[in-house]
Length: 167
Image (cartoon, rainbow, N blue to C red):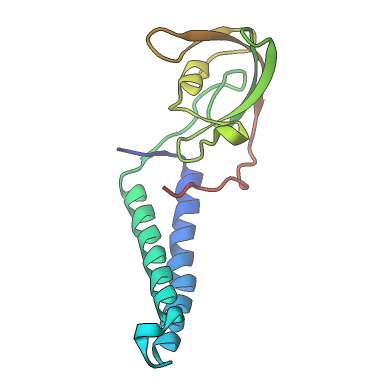
């Protein structure tokens, strides 16, 4: 599956790859060498822990490199008064009689517990390119949908605190 990423996502992923290769990998390999030098490997917990950490680091590097290789760069071409990527939107959910604020993000940053809604999610897809005052129907499945009213849209530029999920 092609992962949709922003240019900033790509920069952060590349920075993590570089950090893992240039900083963590040498540290981990030193720990493996030190643990191996302690002697009997059959009962050397430090050696096995260091090797496991090395495997985890290398696995993460491969995962991130594969993600970049298969990535599709997305950009937000919405106007300032439309719901778009990296914008926060406050919606009134008629069914629950309450307001919620969500930030629209790429799928790699999606985290419903933090109200970060992916552009691939039903809610994210439904809200894109709509304006304040619009009533939007969010299809959940073939038999159920609900309506939300867009109350406010704010442009969020500060996405530095978001982390990229590990799968």
